[in-house]
Length: 93
Image 1: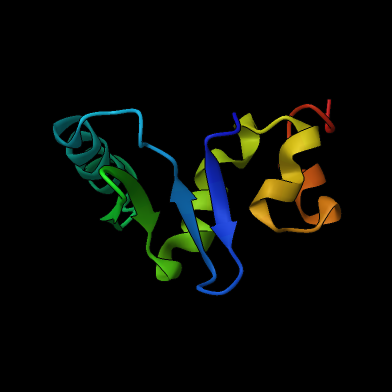
Image 2: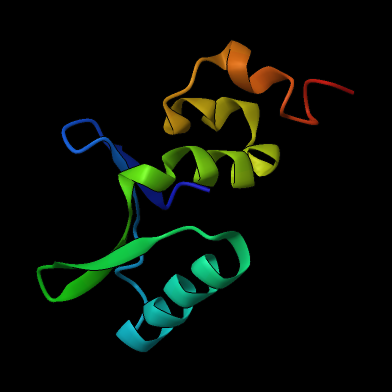
């Protein structure tokens, strides 16, 4: 659950896919767009690649994944805990 980050400078999310081959990252990029309308680009990170989620899709990404996030990882979404409490089935049972 810890293979991503938020860039406060650019205000966007990255999925740290450097351990995967470029063709697989391209498949992930296409799947995110086709299934969830999440737009992304692939950025070079030295000799590897990571997936950059476009800023305009930040809220859509959060809405798509927040129900699967453990409460201890809410800080990774850069949202207030209160905003995510009711979105999480862990806290709303």
